Length: 157
Image 1 (cartoon, helix red, strand yellow):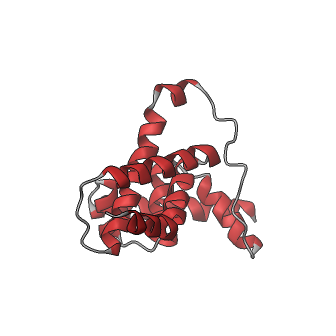
Image 2 (cartoon, one colour):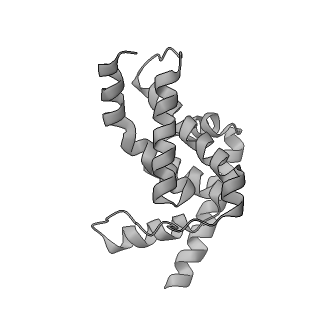
């Protein structure tokens, strides 16, 4: 991959990788680290990509794995983050902001499935590939996430 191609991919997909990492970690600084690690792995990989969608899926997969690795790291297990997602993206509608906060409060296994399905527009089969799950497991997670969301949103009223 030449330098110009790499720069174009970074400019085009950095936001997708960042949103995925922020959703997984709830930490501005950890998400930035994951973005850097993800694009470093892109630079170092010998993978031949078939198309733009293949690159996008590969980057999201690496970001999800980097998030999991960070959570398992000794440092993260022993030290609490000082910036626990204080930065919330700007929303034009207050309801969208409230929904984002409710989704962010969900358990990680549901939150990442909801993010990929509703915000990144992946199918359950594609999410299953990204998370190394069966499509049925993804559908179950989405079903349970919807139940949790319904319960949490009803409590807010």
